[in-house]
Amino acid sequence: MIKIKAVERKIGFNKTGKTLWYPAIHLHSDVKFEEFIELVADETTVSSADVKAVFDRSAKVLIRLLQDGKSVDCGDMGTFRPSITAKTGMGVDKAEKVGVELVDKAKVIYTPRVKVKTALKGVRMERAERVLDVACKPAEKKEKKPEGGGSTSEPGNGSGHVGI
Image 1: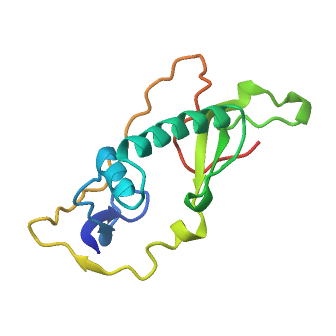
Image 2 (image 1 turned 180 degrees about the horizontal axis):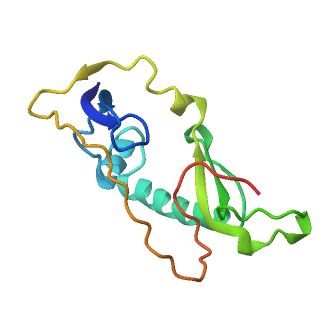
């Protein structure tokens, strides 16, 4: 069962914008990796140490394949693929001028399979108890910190992308 809470969000882009309340998921606990491994082991004939070893190695292999520019099909879990975002306002007028200097960052896009994507269809929901119900204030805009030069070969962890 999923519990929901009320969150306040500002409407519009100006400072005098009205605020309204919306439902949001109340994440009341996290499942730690060790607990997840135990749950998977309980569903199989494999020990938790073996499950952990497979997850650890899978992550290393996944990263290596993503760094090689490959899309990785992970069965019912979905697909992971590398992506890049272009620097804002850095489009060029000819294809020959496109180069790595126009890339803002590399990241990973995860696309769940239908089985995962529809996992919450029809799930039971209820409002969280008052003691658990904590209203969230709208996020304040943070000033962008200056970014240093240089680059990395490791993919980021954002979502969505702008293709080149």
